[in-house]
Length: 141
Image (cartoon, rainbow, N blue to C red; front, side):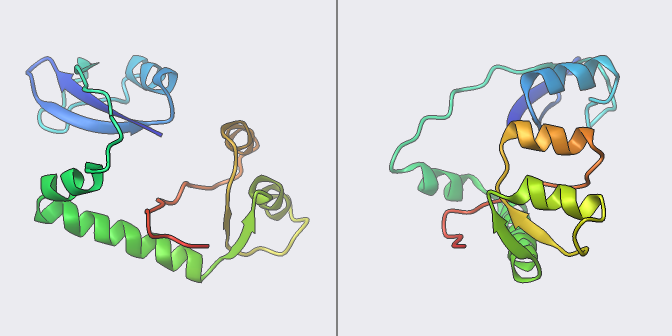
């Protein structure tokens, strides 16, 4: 997933996540990208500073978050923890297992694991429902 900084024709700035640059372009062309402040569909990518990895990055992120962002992050972490507690870890066999469950070759159950971008695209094309779960630096399998 890629986070884009976006700006509408009225100069409202916001962020949104997309699978790829092409995904953003397709959604914009189909009218699926609009400004949350005013509803304008005339939205473009704003200039973004590149993400540079430094030893102080985690500190900068923590300092930049307001209370609402910290609460949202905590909720995401709780959701990811709940998925891991109530699902079977299948490692790099995720795509194979998800497809077997979808087509009735395995008993239905919650699973999580890893998949390549190509495997995820193939699952989506086959109509298999799945979603990425956030990963945090302190997560352990």
